[in-house]
Image 1 (cartoon, rainbow, N blue to C red):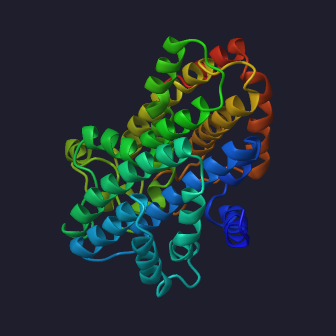
Image 2 (cartoon, helix red, strand yellow; image 1 turned 90 degrees about the vertical axis):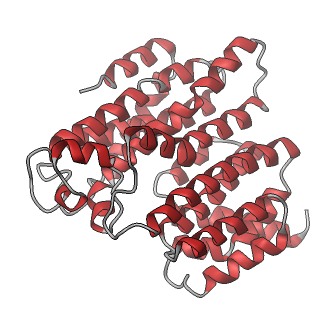
Length: 339
């Protein structure tokens, strides 16, 4: 390992807590090469998030930035450097854009991964970047305040391109480390993988509703709003008729997806405790966050996202030490019942 690569890996370890509140806790469960591959994949995806969420521009400018990211994931070092230079001018004080400004460092760590891991990450990031580019460029061409998504079908598609494909990436990384002897179980695990990502994305869309709508990003589908005679601006500021109903509808979708996480975990060997917990912790946190939000009398129209206290995060994580067993997984499945 050369000194520069060692420095790049150290950077990736150091920057993760700055761009993630909970994933930096979760990643500690994964050892060695698996942990490095997952951390690198997360940082690449987080950089793409910044292109969508934190770097506004015209449709052409947005598409061009994502094109650079896609070229970089095809192996183009010059594209990675160009993307970083563009972000550097805007990055001061912005952790997510500072990550983009340091994109070549993460890119070099990705390039040094084993071939299987490198391919799994590239496929995921390309799916994510291409999908984000499509939605972000379209939104930039629409009037300010227009819904980001048109229909429930688009909501599910968006969840696939920003999170479901991450579930597939993780499953492929796991498969390279598991001594799997049952091809049917491995196929079932891959089939369930998108739901694991979707469950967390739907939960975050609901919990981030107060902030997202106020910054002009409404993920509640336009068709849902039309059914209630509402505009995106109506979703915040006051407890208007229909707003809570839409929140419950979104929560129901999140809980339905979360109910599939135990099925996914059951396809992992019982001896793969760290991987099982890595998958269970976010699901536990999501469920606890949904319950916490339901107790907030001003959610979702109020001024802020309900934040699960750190003590509750760790309590949910500790409860998963037993929940990885199949009987407890069935009880977890029951806890996700739709409202």
